[in-house]
Image (tube, rainbow over all chains, first blue to last red):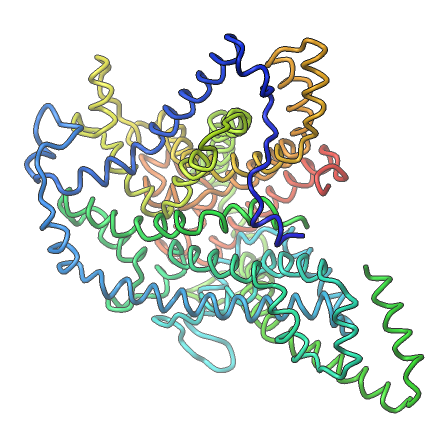
Length: 299
Length: 314
């Protein structure tokens, strides 16, 4: 079901009838709506466009009075200079490592948990499911200090997780929403396929890897995309955990550099920060929308 | 689904004649089930359940650094309830909810209805609307901070001066700071909400529109009598999640003002962070967090009671 929805075209459910479009009144209304949305989109894109076009303008132009909105100078060579100066290659690499780990742990941890809750249902798993729903209802305020205490000095083993990506990976491994999201999908897979495989002597691991995984490619792909996107934008725990400059992710670097750069350098840096997820989104737009349309959390 | 599963399993056992094999397969099934859940449960214990319990306990203790010194009962709570900054932050948290609601509640509903009308290029509009949401929160806030520069060279003030309006203080104006932050939140969030409403509009029964058209109902009448009633369960759920989400916004406040000027934009989430990492007072931070959680729980229970639960989950 969900797989079909992912590929389906946008269904036409508009209020104005096809026949009415030819009448003067509704034709004008339609054009009016079109222009209105177009203008609105342009206004909302203004901040992003402004950063993109202004970042390469002359530094003097930023402080000219009256200020210019459309830039008059163009210095593309600055982009490479700023990239080198801020050592952003390193930050990109750190973020990619973070993202790969997050994807792996999130899908392995949450996916296996959801699979067990949905399909294997060992004794006592319904209690865990109830606990999960309860946890989702409870806000996490007040856990800030307790979590930080765990990170700087993990009980019993006395490990210090500062400057390691493990806290983010472990947090990603256990996300109530992702578990429920996966479970909803696993629940919708026909039970008879699995029972047949079980009768044929396939073990639980075999059923998971040979039957569930291929069936669930669309959801897993969606989760991969969402996790990469989340890992890129994540800043809070990385900011508190990565104290060492050479380990910092893109967001942490951006935060650390706030107010310490010249105006033009800062805009170029912001371009580095926001362009990858935006390009990523334009490429995988259908997948992003799929989550919104078909698989949104129902629990 | 559950019932069917149990039935299937029962027939399995019946068809199998060797009872010993049954017990063994049942056992391996339980064991492998728990092994599958183990990593995730460990993660939940470490970074969700244990911190929740520990956080509540910490809020009743005097702390030094990250360590608990002594149990002091309600002392942390009494201390913060007499603190004017706390009371201000509490009020501000509700102000954020108010302004985010004013700026960002109706907009996605209107947009989704209008975008749904577009015949050619609808996907392009969807992408354009979603793009602001894709700008990472930190980058978005840093961009807003530059654009909202209170001097005459800030982009917003430059644009205002074109219309002969004086430069505004934006984030440095105590009266304007919360609406301005709410505006940046709306910018980051409206796209996702619009797409969410759009997905609901896709399931509307179009024959209703046809009948209404034959009956002579105009565009606005169709919106009022068909589209909005269809959307209403989503709208109710939207209100609840917006209120819960905006009550504890943190990232925008943290990057744009840090709670200033003079605590004018301080909210409970920011205050809890400041207690923990600026003044290194973990017990007080936990107490603020617990109070914030309690208020959120009360709000969400009341709101979910008011909205019809059956509709929301449908």
